[in-house]
Length: 282
Image (cartoon, rainbow, N blue to C red):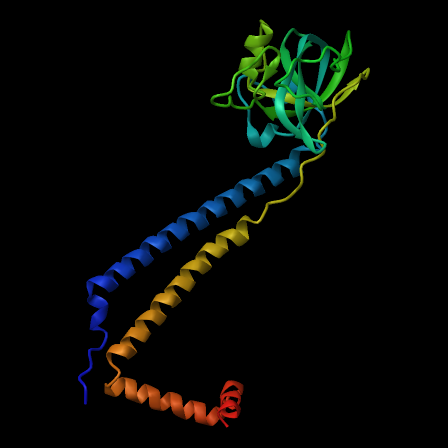
């Protein structure tokens, strides 16, 4: 009878390398799974903001934005505000904005409140390529004293490597707009507003629809990474078992395993594949 090697081969350098690769793979899967859980949490937080703020009653801006230089994402994002005053200065284009199946620009104009403070308003999307000359017939805000309803949004970050050109900007970066427009006095530098309505009204760009309440596939993707760990573990276990049987083919343990397998197969009877093989051999 051949002496059994047993499972000692698992201590070989080759198998230690396999185990190390499995650990690295498992850690990477856990990190990627947790990243997907974090993205799901962010999506759920955005849904909660929409539910809490989007259809809230509009309030005067100073009731919710107490510090013009700060933006509270959970309390302020999407919340409607009321502003009274007049549009001032030129219209700017925030370029590379999707809308109506193509890329265009958002109309941005400064709004001067009755108390003198400045707040920038996004007056909707127009099918204008902001990388070209700015058209002279862009929709402008109505002249004179008006009332505006808008939803609060946080000032966007500057985009590295992209610069402003004339009256076009790469993002709705309010501090940059302040410099370009040359406005003075107190300015809401951390936020801007997406237009809901103006009284009296004037021509605007296409106003954005309500964002979808969709958390995306992040949960299924997260679970998928943990399933990959399980599959890899099963694969390593199967490979180890096959090598064990190969190295211990003449040993008592493998012989008993083969006998038990043969008895189970006999009790079950021939499989469809066995019957097909028998017919081919006949």
